[in-house]
Amino acid sequence: MATDNEVIHQCIEAVANSDTDIAPAVYASVSEKMPDMDQHIDFMDSRMRGRMLDQIYKLLLGDVDDGYLEFEARTHRGYGADLAQYQGILEAVKDAVCNVLSDTWSAAEEAAWDRTIVHIVGDISAALEGGVETQESLDTA
Ligand code: HEM
Image 1 (tube, protein in one colour):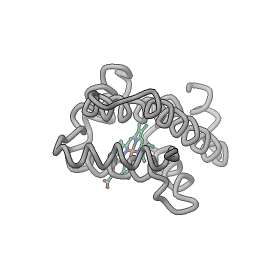
Image 2: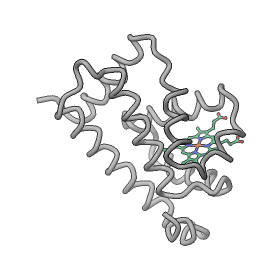
Image 3: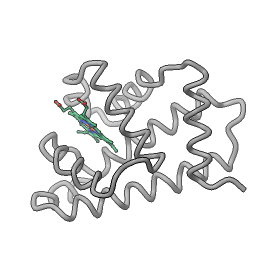
């Protein structure tokens, strides 16, 4: 049986092979579900949105160095990012991937993505707790 990491890998590869740019769908979904994110999204141009999404893919694939999340949590604290927003954007990526792969999407994929997102959100929560100004972020999450 494939590991969660292998499943995520296959999904992201399949989306890449489909030549679909999911960035517009991801950011539209984030904006719809979390209107308070608009102030941040509107501010970002499409290349920056693309680079942020690339980094989210790497996170989902486990392809980041130790300490990456602490670094990102620290820089993102300045943008007011909170735990619910991190979770929301990860879910939006999952939903967009699921839409592209809807013909083959199964309960196994759903479960692998859900477990991976829970895991990453837990790590982000720990990274946020490591900072000084995080309690406010956690309180509003
Ligand atoms: C796991 C989730 C996330 C990852 C991995 C991530 C990663 C990144 C990266 C790598 C950049 C720099 C893009 C560049 O090269 O210019 C960036 C920019 C940005 N991110 Fe995120 N991000 C995440 C979630 C969020 C959330 C939840 C918010 C909500 C406030 C947010 C707000 C921003 C903003 C406003 C910028 C632009 C900063 C600037 O002006 O340079 N991000 N993000």
